[in-house]
Length: 353
Image 1: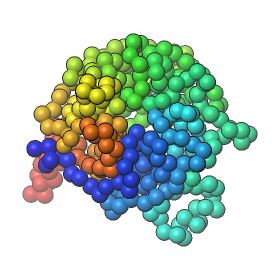
Image 2 (image 1 turned 30 degrees about the horizontal axis):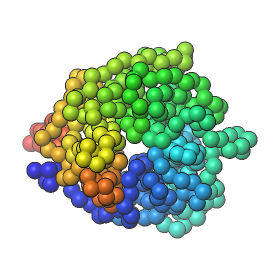
Image 3 (image 1 turned 180 degrees about the vertical axis):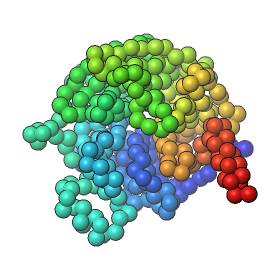
């Protein structure tokens, strides 16, 4: 049954794990992995990969994080990516213009944007390089989301901590301790979105995020006016509590989890092929009977524009780094999507009688 749900796509150009991936239109931007500096664009329409660039040779990638910044220039053809963290730490940005554009388009854009499609140092308004993270901050397996009233705040979760970095002032404005006894890394950290929009504003300038790792489930509310956090514990399904390093994707009201690892080695190691769902609105967990085709961890999941979930790279239960790229339809895991499709079909045929 699982084989029918997951479709195997063209293999990655190279085996990858601890991958970071960002969506841009119909492209999946694959931004390096553990020990692998190459970055690729996967065109979901062409089902092909194309090299974008490589990280600088002095950058070592291990447990880094990549997020898409919110640009004010409204140029839908360009997106700015921020890559930071890992061990050792780095902080770089890339102005990306599609590598699938024709030569004329790219040459025109190159006059407007310097250093496009390459990683360059993150700098302040005076062109001084900025490294995100204090010396004592352990950013291996760090996760982050963008939020705030102007989408100018970077919320960073790592080890047992959460920090807020203001992307306009290039300063940290808040450090706090998470309500957990677990070590937090390679975890799930998402903005609580409503209908796929930006981080949900609870009231006035309050924003909500969700974090899951091993036994820990947290609802995190940030009051932007007072610069304070509130933490609320969320029960975690016992089937997933041994695991971290899973792929995850948030889709409106739900979060889907794929695979995971129990942080043990040898005969005590357990690599999962299970798929779990957490419903934010219902505060309810489901473990599906259908699973991944094989156990997997250190992979990444991302939702494409056509409502497919892509699961990229990872490490299997034989400790092989894989070049596998699979996809599955959202409606296989979220019945509300199927109801919406059926409703659309019903309305369409009813109006065209």
